[in-house]
Length: 279
Image: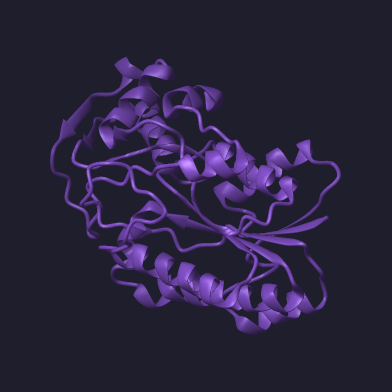
């Protein structure tokens, strides 16, 4: 089995690389943007014309939610058009496409966890661009898994977890919002789920929600990071019920993962427990 990972230098790509050692029977090809730029149709065509893959895991994405509001062209170029180029080549090569999406495809108006059947209604450019990517996959591909996740973090790259630790180490005060509620998700857990789906060779193609269990505000998440890292006294953690951002965020975006559990017998651990594995 041969598996392509796009965006391999990002946090999820790096977590998949760490997890891949548990699957010696699979050949993994980790492609950075320098190797494969999904924004360029010719780049994707050329890459697939010289390589044959059983699966393509697309972790390449435009992820700056606030910048996307003023840079919608590039957000859609990567999160939608780039996904379309991959879907077209995957269909041509009979490759199963695993597309990573987001809780931000929802508007946050619910107060119970979102299921895969709930109506999408993104309220920012980032969410809209990711939803368009989902739609391209469903229109073009016969063999696909769309995995929506939430509040992704890891030991790698720029994310909320590493930002909180940096503020703590520099002994800077930190004010975090209590306005939004979702589920922090360990990218290492998401990587494990992706590889379990591949290893199962399942044909239960569909949209799935993949996040750790439980729910939290961003303030709850920050407090737990500091507590578990024993840095609680080295920074002043404040909370606010309003924190102005350029892009609107869904107030509630907890994901229901029962479908994943039913089809793959995968139970997601609580976000607090998962956080301890990184620390």
